[in-house]
Amino acid sequence: MRQALIERKTLETQIKIDINLDGTGKARLTTGVPFLEHMLDQIARHGMIDITIEAIGDNHIDDHHTVEDIGIAFGAALAKSVGDKKGIARYGHAYVPLDEALSRVVIDLSGRAGLQFHCAFTAERIGNFDTQLVQEFFQGFVNHAHASLHIDNIRGINAHHQAETVFKAFGRALRMALTADERMAGMLPSTKGAL
Picture 1: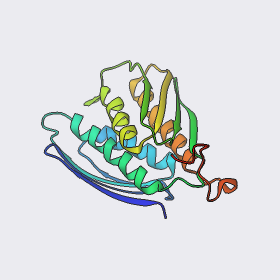
Picture 2 (picture 1 turned 135 degrees about the horizontal axis):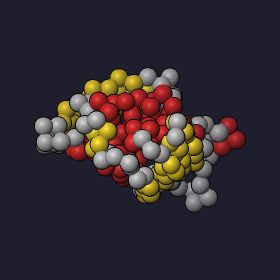
Picture 3 (picture 1 turned 30 degrees about the vertical axis):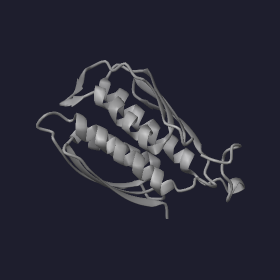
Picture 4 (picture 1 turned 45 degrees about the horizontal axis):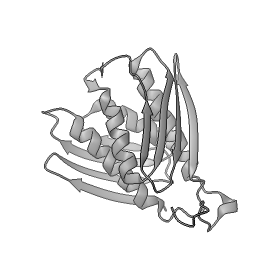
């Protein structure tokens, strides 16, 4: 089983994350950031990843540290659970619509961190959630998953729909990249011989 348990403790947050890449899409989330929990549930369901997260953060200041550190811990857990990457597809992509909104996400589990984030949110906040934190989550993720990630919100009027299409597409792209390719069994999906 491709699983990992990561604990991250700083002066700002305490994060415990347990993931199973070969799960059934179940999420158990206690983060103190309700909208983020809604988005993480999208990753779990569409990525078919079981995710358990317990987070305590300095939310009395704002949600920034909690959201960023959950992204960091999720990236670290993914890197640990995927192992040597032999036999996986490595690349994944997805387009996901939600009413008027449409997003595209492309990922490469390349071993190199890089984020291209192109989402002009139509609102600064979704309820109490600062939309700038979506990019912070994904930046933390790529830095610790060592992945190249391209996120494009192609269109959207409702900021909630924009964010949700991004997270759903991310889950689906991740699922594709993590899928075992029988023809690559035991092989590393790289001409360099290293990822």
